[in-house]
Length: 69
Image 1 (cartoon, rainbow, N blue to C red):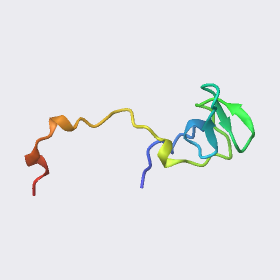
Image 2: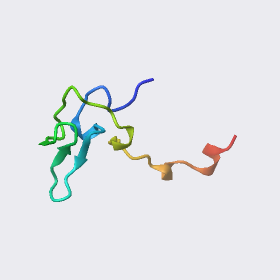
Image 3: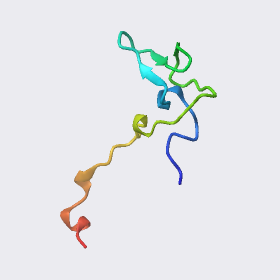
Image 4: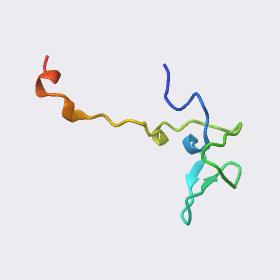
């Protein structure tokens, strides 16, 4: 199974990374240091809940009949 966002590791998608409360910077809990969102390191672990797709589904283009069996 292919998981989107996991092929190219980025700190913004890592389990150990969190947003700093005081600024927009990211903080790595594993390395105990600030990091960039596109940076990656060997301790990368993908967090599926941090992935945000580029496109939103437009449900207005579907009708009720599209979902009927």
